Amino acid sequence: MSESVNDPARWAQLNERLAEFERRLLDGFAIDPEERTARLRERSLEWAREIGDQAPSDEFEALRFGISGELYAIASEYVALVMPLSQYTPLPNTPAYVLGIVNVRGRIVSVLDLRVLFELPIDSLSERNFLLILQSPEMEFGVLIDRVLGIAQIRRDALQKAPANLSGVRANYLLGVTAEQATVLDGARLLSDPDLPVMAE
Image (cartoon, rainbow, N blue to C red; front, side):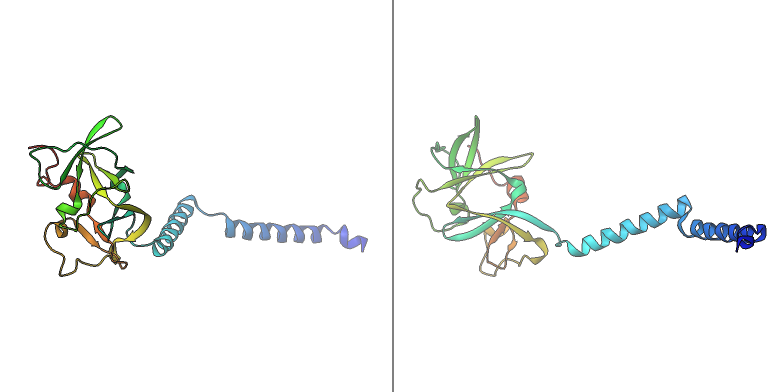
């Protein structure tokens, strides 16, 4: 047995096998830098495709609220503030849907009464009414609402078109209708429509 251990030929054969094993390991795990980058890129694209398949299609967050017994919603990106309606100042020589102006944190903001604009049933104002401040880089105004109903996630591709009986001004500012029959307003159009005056003429 001692002769086998001290046999130089056996040691040379063992060293050769170890070297061969090492070469195989290196061949299997050592990757060319360009190939490694390509593999990482492909893996990242594969993960992105998997995440895209799992993510809802074009979903956005919206604030749900009620006006005259009807359910409405608008994308949260256009909502700057919700506050109780306290005092407001009526403005002469303005369209009927302009309720007046209010002071919001030192800024004078016009208030629209969507009940008038959308030709909805009108009840008298109460302490339960709220003011929804809508804002974009170009425009800011308040909207009178009855109550706040919370936040919801809405899929744009799941919105239904306006029903046939919905026409007039309200249809012009409509983004779509949800399965729960919530009318989703087009905040971008509301805040950029040049035909929607909100200040005194």
